[in-house]
Amino acid sequence: MSRDQTEQTRLPRIVNVGLCAVLVSFCDELRESANRAALAFRAELEKTAPEGVLETSTSLTSVLVVYDPARLGVADLHGHLTDLLQSRQWEKADLPDNRRLWRIPTVFGGAHGLQLQEAAALAGLSEAEALRQLSAARLRVMTIGFAPGQPYLGSLAPHWDIPRQSGLTKQVPAGAIAVAIRQLVMFTTATPTGWRWVGQTGFRGFRPESETPFALRPGDEVQLVPVSTEELEAASAGDQTGDAGATWEIIA
Image (cartoon, rainbow, N blue to C red; front, side, top):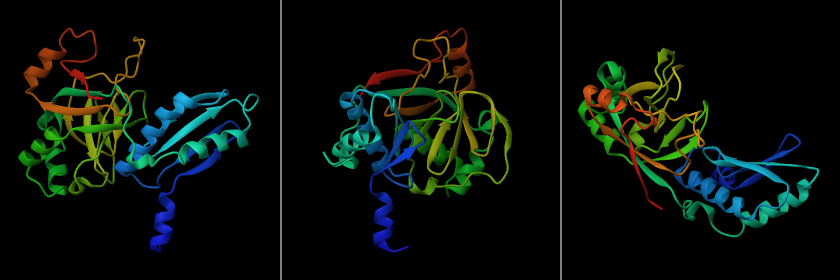
């Protein structure tokens, strides 16, 4: 592929999805700048959306816009989105306001992260250095998906661009931290996975009993704080909030 063709795939584009949705894509591959663009664009669209837009949501590098075709024509929607796209350089835009930094107690390795050593080796690191890097990183909630409230956190340093497993781990528990392709995912349900399990939290990302069932929001940041098994069990015992010892503060 030529450089011009590669650059072309990075350009924002608007694509119809079925009869009542439009997808605004900023890139065909995961890039921090494209994720920033998607988050910032959606935040601005929420403020300026024409009547007839019903819902917006973000993926890693795109924004889905659901609309009522009886109230808003697709040509008018395309026009609004095009004007908004051209109004600024979205890949350099500020992230949305009221983002939060979460610090979440995490047990790494051992019985609570059976594949930490394997993941570290694939990243070219010792287990101790892998733990240091994973716990030092402040990672953005790039999107919520796959399961209710489940965050994808990124991006890690390039040497963490490790592949998924060729097979599946039969099951990891809710709250498990797994790594692949420069991202961490925190599972909200017990599930099989091809990602490598490296740590465990007591944090509940999906809280169906709450007025805000998704605990984390795209654009939030997460830092995993190493604790012992005993400390995590103590923080989780009797916890009614779902935080299991996690704290947060507003960062923007």
